[in-house]
Length: 511
Image 1: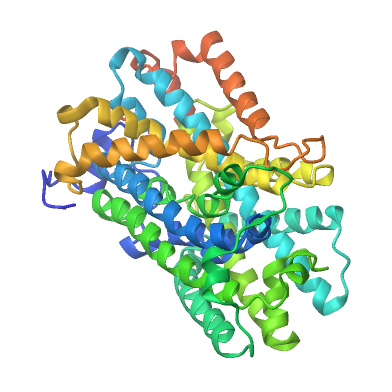
Image 2: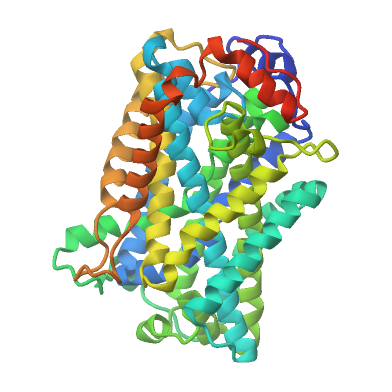
């Protein structure tokens, strides 16, 4: 990895214009702020803990521990491959723009179209997963503190309220959002340290190393241990999502061609370490496995804190976890809205002229913010009738995002030496890293579409394949009927220019 190659000497704005876009969003973010967004969205205090119940049932401590190690390593390969491409093309359009530039000219628009739609699906789903998890933990806290009865309907109401809060913050608190993203990094680091320290020194009893690293639990109904281990990787893989935020925020980041890729890679390896420590702390501190599984709070990590630390300390640290999850959801709405803004800027969403409007005062895509929040709410609603809906939402997030992550990497591998590197790249390791990343995403795409509970009924059905097929079918239909004639077609720049004028934005610059 190096950042010494082919320094162009262009400013961020000049490089963006060279890629075909005029600077519209405010470029206020530092390299640390860019990293902070991705680190916050990965959020080990969100992903690890909101799917901890899933992990306890689907493989237990052994899969929770070793799955985290293995998935973190493979995710680092995916992130390294993405970071190299981000350095070459630092734009909010991100993954679908990369696909367009890397694909053969005749099929470039099609590659970009489908990459963008999978990215939108994944971004909306990960926002839903994060804020739904926050709602579940908030419900657990309210249950402990005020006797709040946790029901699916009440959880959905909390979910909607949290999405509304994050929509408002991203609409009116633009500078506050930047500050909170920076605070979030330290909240996560200090929070993990405090929680793990308390779980290490306060309890009188800890589990043995053989339990943490070797205990296998299968409450899925499936007879195959191998199958359970493989689908149990979802807990870790879902946590390692959202780091494409560093790419989507590059139009708002200074020195974007190096800050963006570094933000991707740093967010992964720091989360890998922090998450491993956090999971060890919780798993060693389990006092009653069955008690945690059947906790009236609905959140085993909350019960583990209570059993190990007592009511007062347990509830205080639960608030630390909820705070981290709220930071995470806020950052996810930010990144999601930037993806929607960029994709609609190229006319790819219905009513695109609405979604890429920019508030002239705050210079943020307000309509895109609220579309991101509404889309997340819709994805979470099946929880009212489907008890495994949360696992399905996280599966959709992983599948949608990782397909979008790997398509540009596949195209970059196919391009070989013809790929024009940015100032940050992998050198001679580029091809090998890319091949490993592509292979891993192929595996997990299949895994997380599979049924997670047996027997399969309407109440336990994993609806991830349905959501993926609906988006894929809709995108394909629109592509064949219309979009192939105009999407990213230079002959239709006048259409884009008129749309930009309606959005009070400068006219796009031709590549």
